[in-house]
Image (cartoon, rainbow, N blue to C red):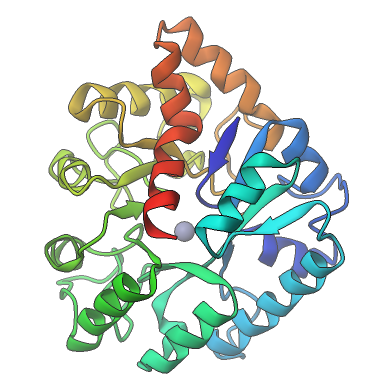
Length: 309
Ligand SMILES: [Zn+2]
């Protein structure tokens, strides 16, 4: 069983005019392939990448409707996770649990009311920034980045209150530490790797990983070659990230956040979501204990979902 904390499939499916729920030869995942690969819960990000001529908010509303339309036609196969009882229902049935997330706090346009209406739409996690500056904080691509703004602090507090998962992938370091200090709940980096293994601004330093662990959050491993490093080394390099984080903080804070459909550049050897059984086999080969593999594959993320939803 797998819980995967990040994919951009809603956008990819919308742009290529395919259904998330129908098997496709395009993209990295769809409902049949998720089920085949043992994915039990998938986080579906709404990422405003349709067109820069539309406001980010308008884009994620369009994508949200695109998701809901398919969800409502497949209620017997998918369970949208908005509460702990939804979580129980998904876990006890054959349904895929789907967590709706938004990537990029610029969609809020500085309005807490927009955060709350997204919550009412079923969104349960927000990646506070993408790579650039927004009303909440700065992303990793901003030089001389600032931390959380006053509005950003309100957003963190409101997310704690509502029961939304705070996602700090993409945020610049100052903002990262501000969030850790301020949040009452664990925070996650849904799709980031280790900077000690591969020095990329989107990856986390050892200090950041330790900070997330202290906060009882998690780090979702990303399969994009740019963040794994050494694109031709395939799965071996992905496992180096796992080994490093495991050695640093143990097995309670690792998870998967593939970034499927968010890139054309997965590491070699990873074609699509059907790779998961091979990744599990690789972990077994490296003599990880069964209990550790279970935590990485789904246990740690389930803990976060149980706690926050
Ligand atoms: Zn991302």
